[in-house]
Image (cartoon, rainbow, N blue to C red; front, side, top):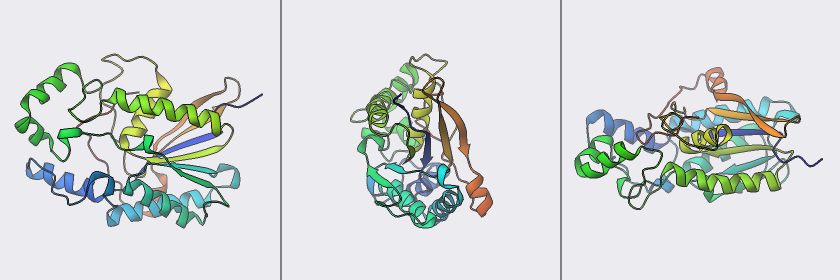
Length: 252
């Protein structure tokens, strides 16, 4: 019988980025804009993000052969690609022999459109009508001009899921992406409908936290295994960082 789902699916958020650091500083200071020179797609890891990514890679490298990924699917954003590269490097794996690595644009960060680089204070002050509209329709459905709603992100993840079931059934797959992807994949795994109770804010996803799913042969479905697993960082003594998400993900 054909297996439609991966044997194990890990979904990891990237390590702390320079953007996370700049955002925290801007929010703490009450600024309207996040002061960072990079485009979102080009934002690199911070020094701490490098340490976190290496800790995650060492943990994966210590796992038995049957508990190691054979496929890595990665967001095209620099911070995610750097995280995946460091995981591979620390685990001692080489793409092409130990595993296959694929960059997939469907795993990109949520697009914020004209709200990009604005703090919560900045959105409220510069676009009060949009701030009010978001509060009225809810963060799940709200689409900023030029940006995406949570529904839009979930739609592209439906396409990604179809590819995973078609091409990677029975394999062990690691996804390296963003907080929005981790939360929306949890949402996709738990419900096919939305309501105010099921689309409220999800808990923050720490940098380099791992959420995993395992295949259940009896149902040929994935079952949630680990949620925001942080032992690799804790064991390595790497500080744990989380980003309170002002745009907030749907709650699974």
